[in-house]
Length: 412
Image (cartoon, rainbow, N blue to C red; front, side):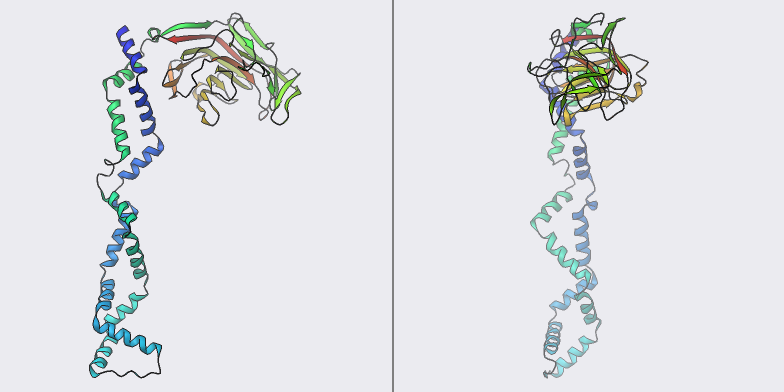
């Protein structure tokens, strides 16, 4: 088992796995799939094929051929010149030879001339001329050559990317890595304990956000929230759990206003935000906790660097409607709803987060929920727990309940 674990750990840190994961994200993206689908569609469905086919159809039609023949026929050209001259000077007498009179009269009564007149100003001729100009440009000929190539997909850069991805996917190391994961490799062989809290007492927890900048006012609420954070007074350690309670008790406290800055504000509710910054922080590894929430409000248990604007990890987040796990990072957030776990009011679940060099992975009761590339800063993060009431929703009382937290470091 140890040899398998060592191999698994080596692959997990390898550049080949990092390349495989990057390529997997690319080839499974909607844009890549759309490009591949576009290149693999039949030539006859392309705009270039349809325009080329229409041009050839018009060019070979008897009506167009008859018109083009008329333009090249000497007798027709002489007749047309005579007609143009007569139209320009209707009072001028034009003397014709006996042969010209006979020939011009025959042309005037012919289907040949009738076809010429019909085609001369027809939409088909206009379309043919427009197509003739377009399909003989260098740009069109280049595009048409691409689409006419039956092996255009194999000649593309995306094909090379896909082949490299398949090569890695079928390599012994990558197949071993994912097969071992599916076999539920013994994580105890891969990690060693680094921190544990059974929540029997509050020695590891302090009130506030644990801001990295000591000049920042820690533990403040916002004026767009219903609650004031209560400096740890709404956090209770009893019966082997930590409870953060949101209560309908008024309190005056300093709050952040987006326009005015820090202002003293009257709040209708109190709650808490707690952190382990002084007791524990860690970069990478495995983070586990047994959590549930109940009642109204938003609840969060996860990881933070204490620096506003940096990503946060939600081992558990209740958004007022349903639980979630994922990466909180502004517009780049990647969250997964856990609708199937409701109602959280009655059941605890074990939430696990694995932080590796290449990936961030979330599990609920050992079931993998979300896997994304690692975009976290190389910086230790500490545990953070909080409950709050945004003013976009109705106020109310609620609780965040945490039975225990266990943290592990990866075995090298």
